[in-house]
Amino acid sequence: MADVMKADHAASQMTRKAQTLLVMCGIWPARRETRPVSLYDCVRGAQSRIVEFGRIEVHGGQTLYAVPPAVEGLMHSVAELLENATVFSRPSSSVVVSVREVGAGAVIEIDDAGLGMPPDVLHQALGQLRDDQDLTRLGAVPRLGLACVGRWSRELGFNVELSGASAYGGTRAVMFVPFRLLTEPLPKPAAHRRPAVEPAEHVGPVAPQASGRDDTPVVAGHPDDAPSRPAHPPRRRPVCPAGAADAAPPRPRPPHGTRRPARCPVPSPPNPGRRRRHAPRSPV
Image (cartoon, rainbow, N blue to C red):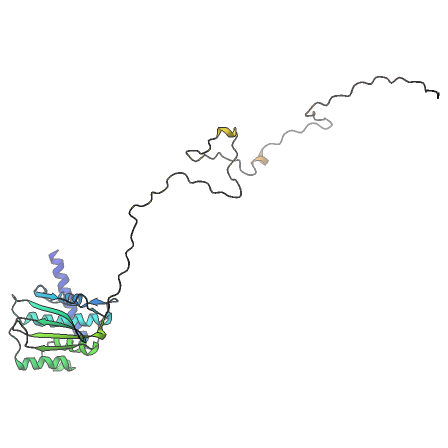
């Protein structure tokens, strides 16, 4: 795991150096952030891009947020200033970073405990920060760190100053970030709260829904024999498919001239016998 972390840290340093070359050639890195980032996190991100990151102490900046378009430039510039502070100071010393709010914005102060910078070297370093110098004017083996910081400052609108007024006897770098590069943090999305007790899932039979027709097949038997509320869903008996009745063999028809027996016997009328003939009555 330690080897993986070392490889990742080395990749971060190579990425920073490649970005420095791109900035000096006029190519700006792609914007990474889409949300405001605190200045504290900007300094911590810059800390991860240098070799001796363990010597950095960061104080303040948790409540000051940079706008997303300025995050990469601020982080890259702070990384270059931290690299200079660790290279030109004793390995056993610390580099203290203080972030605080001022009247017109915020400042990031970087103090090292080195030997400081002679006046001529300090003047040359300030020239690299303020002037847009070409690569050919930076020497045979150019140091691109401060020149890159100067280009970022002109692109975004912040300011960087160097002085020998460090409280630790070394050099102090002060980065001034104006209010137009600062913003308010975005509100965090409300977390979805789950109920303390989740309702149990219904595993029993589902009650039938009322509908216009009854699709339940008719089952022979007395209606009182069926339970009013069955414990288990009733089993469906196979229903004769449509057309099965037509497929049954027809019943034989009786021979021609044969009458079907009546369903109920019809009583025959009583035998009247022979009617007696009466003589016509004579009128009285």
